[in-house]
Image (tube, rainbow, N blue to C red; front, side, top):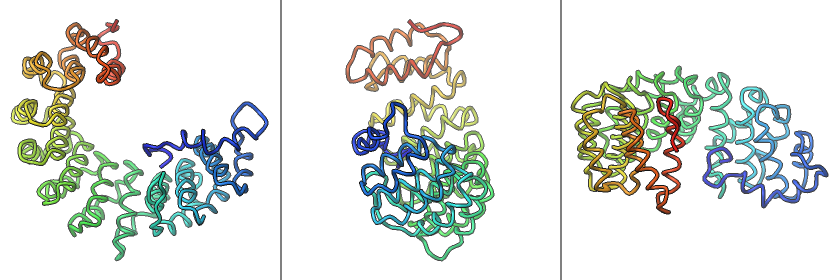
Length: 365
């Protein structure tokens, strides 16, 4: 997808949209009008480049929604998916024109090699269109067609807190426990965040699911709810020990996001996870302890041991956690500076410094 795909259309446009970008006759980016005109070009690459630029214009390009909407019915799934992404970037201003056609596209099973399923791009676009988008997706959760329920739930993730009115319907989807729709319902609740707190009991039930994918998505949704997910702490503690790798990792992350409400037992579980046999779990436990700040003070000696004994590949993560817990930059900066000179850890170490910024008025060297 234009906004979230690992293969960003920003890169694609450089190569595929070169003819359009170089043919506008001026140094700056093409105007919205020039982009709209380029959509009439028969060259696929030119159209894709024009859509990329319209995406970057976002709401400023809403006047072009009618023309972009026509591409939803393109015979090429990449153009259809890209058009949906552009309409989503335009936001609520495009809703009156775009939503009817996007609603039809929710049933489009075609797959774009760049942006993924057309239906998912259309659902995301509707979800980004504010109250009108929520009003469109909400009744679709009651559909008898699982594909439509899945699409509606997926789209509601992108509505954020504005999708709170859909929480009761999403809980009903979870109660059906349909493998085809439950993960998208959980994804929707994750996007809604703390406003979906009434779904915590249903998500706790999903933590007991036999499908580990459902389990770790439930962990992610609970993490997004922060302190509101405190009732899930006992089950999350168990999952840091007994789940598969992805479940243990996401359970640890959820405990960190819930905060001090995890209590002494939750803190102990995270410290134990520092010695998990899997690197990814150990890393997430480190990050979670950092999120807890001073509440995790008793974990400082253990984190220091993790750094000294290189229990995780990139010690900069543990340095960040120590900095967040203690506020003392000296030891963490020393560790991060060492990690920066290791090619395999360099990028992550630099990212850690950028995340921290100057602590308590101290600027890292």
